[in-house]
Amino acid sequence: MSAVNLLIPKLMYTTFQSKKFHSVWILLVVLGLVLPFSGCSPQSGAEYSSGFRTGGTEGARLSVFLNVKESSGPQVWLRITDIEIRKDNLWTSIASKPLEVEVGRMDWGQAMLAGGPLTPGRYDSLRITFDKAAIHRQGKLVFLSLQRPVLEIPISPAIDLKKHDSQSIFVTWDVAASIAGTAFIDPVMSAAPQSIPLVADLAYAACPDIDTLYVVRTDKGRVCGSMGITGRPTYLALDRSRNRLYVLATDESAIKVIELSTSRLVDVIRVPLTTEPGFMTLSPDGIWAYILDERGHYLIRMDLRSGSLAGRVRLGSRPEYVIYLPDHQRLAVSTAFSQTVFLLNPEDLTIKETVSVGSSPQGLLVWKDFLYITESASNTISIYDLGRRKMKGSLNVGFCPRRLFMSRGHIYVTNFEGGSVSVLLPGQISVLKEIRVGGTPMEMASSVNRRWLYVGNQGSQEVTVIDLTPGRLAGRIALGSAPLGLAVIE
Image 1 (cartoon, one colour):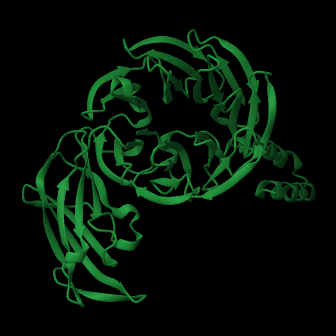
Image 2: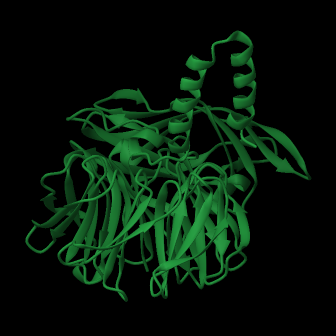
Image 3: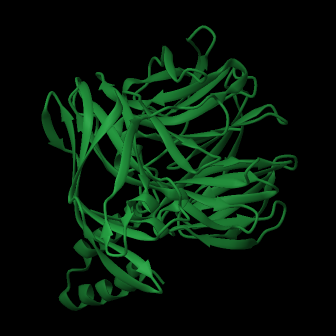
């Protein structure tokens, strides 16, 4: 029983005793109207993520990652009190607080050291201040004497930050070479700017609060670079055949077009007549973009070839999610506040069917003739039979389910407030497994070849990685800001 349900009888008893029934009854009615839409209600990226933007119209952003040269080397622990970067012989601190790094606890041998806004310019050196160091020996932590508490590292080549840039620097730590004898440590580190590889085995994660798109190497599980995308990048859509990554920039009501092979911005498509475009998906042929204007309550169809508006229809209150159903030639749109899923013709956007569902429908997924619908306020998944046009059933999952994703014959559900991912078998009305990931998991993408499921974790500001073969947590990729849209190129 919820805390609200426990509170109501007590309030009513107090009300009758004090003869103030009328005013408190009004309060209870208001609570009854508001509470079903709280907690698990739809939220924009700004409402459920944290961080900071690039620093005004002239700002840029820099992220600093530490890569261990050999993860199997000595298990060393370091406490870092400051990280500074130099431009024009002036040092600027970019460390928000002291941090600890330990080789044995760095997933895939990488840790995020710092990230923040900087003024544009040429930066040529890092300076790291160490406080303490230790090594694990025979099950004990043995402290080491630091030969150089302050280490200055040239950035080779120097990095040029321009207006609206968001770039990354990678510090490589040779742990084995850092150990001097048995009681001393002299950290051996080098620093270099990012180098994003050719288009293969890459994952992209959009971080709206810092106008940044991070790039992850799926073969190594490490961030390899970042790009600055102004206007709060929220959702991503890939078209590998056209060498394009489409990025929805919500604050600018625009689609930013990135050339995959060069990681360059090559076009900006304005989305007209929108208040807050909050979600985007593409047609299977990559020609049409379907965008939801949450606050304006519209579904919009854009022609990506011409960059023009091709259609627009007003739906129920706050459309939340849209998917294309290619086998049924329909679009499915969930509207969280009106408790409805609309099925539309994808060409002229006429409504063909209206499906009434439970409270706060959000994520959607189609499997054969069945449409799976997350109902976040009731912690359930509803299954609608598209052929028979009726509900097949529902099942309970974790707290506040938000998104659905299918990979390798299983359906995965992110439980936003429950810090877990539920695993379902298609066609069965039961939960096969629950995977604890912590934080507030949201969007998902997968690497089929490597059998990874990537989960954008809002609360822990990372991409949580699940190994799909055993169905368990494999590691975490720290970003320093809440990720939203995800995309993977095999």
